[in-house]
View 1 (tube, one colour):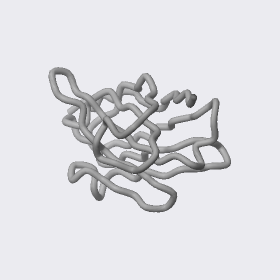
View 2 (tube, rainbow, N blue to C red):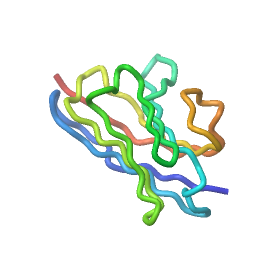
View 3 (cartoon, helix red, strand yellow):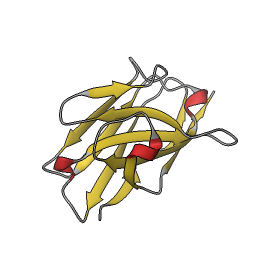
Length: 120
């Protein structure tokens, strides 16, 4: 079992930055692909970014603004978010799976999520 806990969310003005962290316990993240997803009120959960060992993948909405990274020694995955927009407001959740994927159902373990609110 892998337990995931997100942190780093909060309220930020448009154009600002936040760095989300996803800390794992129970097992090392070294052998897992990791993903970040988000869900805004009244909307479906959507893919944001994913990372295998070194390969990264981004939703079009995240390209050029968000960066996913991992520190296997700290058992933590990060999502650096720059140039934030009001439409980025959502609950952001990290997930662990066997392979990097844009599909939520490919991930086996999920955190509870952290709220990101971007004001205009």
